[in-house]
Image (spheres, rainbow, N blue to C red):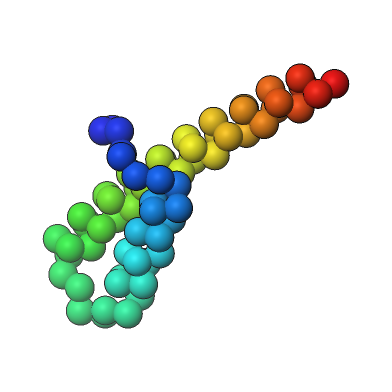
Length: 66
């Protein structure tokens, strides 16, 4: 997966836009659905990675406080 050059907040906003597009447009063609789902998968993977890295960073901070 190519590294995304966006923030977590931007990724979540884009995911929300993709979801709204798919929910509000019942006539979306299959090619468009496919590309939107692929983009959503990339964004979800990016967000999961960001959350995992944040969790590790917070764990290290908490350990340092003990």
